[in-house]
Every structure is written in C-alpha cells, then in structure tokens.
Image (cartoon, rainbow, N blue to C red; front, side, top):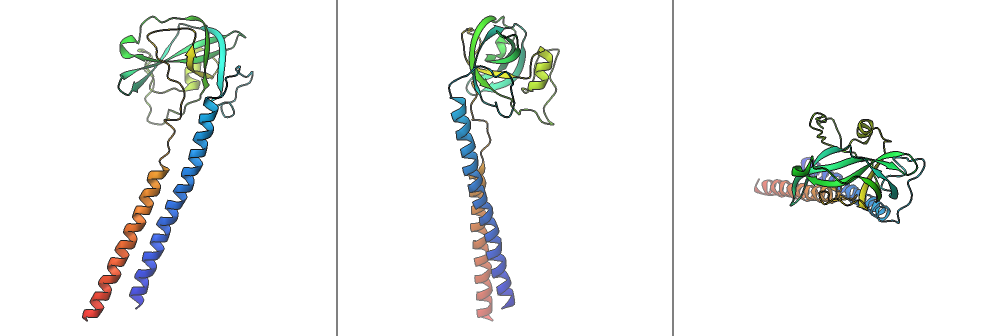
Length: 226
C-alpha cells in the first residue's frame, strides 16, 4: 500500500509540476505577443523628427524622417537573405541638416556589389531607430582589412564612422541606388518560442501521467497474481 501511495504521489506531483511549467509558458506567450504587438504598432506609426536627445530604451523602434547628406564611407555587415543569398548591410554616415552625424542602415547589397560605387549625397530618409543586440561572446571580431563585420554593434560602428551611436534603419530614401534593397525594421527576429515550450511541458506531463498509470497497473496486476 505504501509503495502504491508513493507511486501515486510521484505521478501526480510530477505531472502537476510539468503542467505548471506549461501554464507559465502560456502566460509568457501572451506577454511576448503583447510586446511584439506594441513594437509593431510603434514601427508603423507616423514618423517624427529625430529627437534632440536620443535614448536607446525610450526611442527603440521610433519611426523617424530625417533630411541630410549620406557620406561615402561604409561599414559592411555580413548577412544572408532567404532566396537571395549572402550579402552585406550597408552602414553609412548620415550628416543631418542640424549638424548632427548619425548612421544609416541603407539596406542589403549582394556580395558581388560589396565595393560597387554607390549613390551618396542629399537625402530624405524615413526609417526606424534601432540598437540591435546582435553581438555575444561568440561573435567574431570585424575583419577591418576587408571591411567585413559580422554583427551590427552600434557603439563600435559609431566609433569607426565618427558618428553618434544612433542607427536609423532605412525604410525608404529619396536617394535611390539600384544596388541596395532596404531591409526595414520588423519583429521577425524577436524570439518567441513559448508556444513550443508549452507544448513540450504539456507533452511531458502527459507522458509522465501515462508512465505512472502504467506502473500502477503493473503493480496492481502483480499483487493480483500473488
């Protein structure tokens, strides 16, 4: 009897823990979906002038329209586009009409167009401010001799281009260049795996209950035979 009670407690207790983890992931899913919805709404809002004081927390994803001059210096960030292949994000200095100098992510260029001469000069650019978190302990250092970077590190790029640590990711530009395709800000890369985690925990709970029931029945059958 004690062993049966022990198996019952282990079975129900383990299942309860696994189910609670699944419920927690469902709650996290709702929380993350709300955050993504807020970001999406912010991305497509009416663009405003670049604030005089820019804050990476308060102004992340802020839609901005700015007039200025795109410089010919560039940083090339190695990326890959689905159904297109490898290429580079083109990061350039952007001197605003008020004298401030920020960076603009002009978009995607194929590897074959890495060193192609691009249109520069006066432009009106509409896009979103972004401080992407793309670097970690495994990110290779930039190959400065070949001007190939492996992630957008706003502070490091600003130091190289001698700009403010502000990145405007272009959605559209009056300065057209056929070698560049804009890569506007979106939420596609924001991780949201909570549904898969919830399914995993609920599945483990079902398996745990099934195994517990199996052992209980097996024990009951053994007692009946004896």
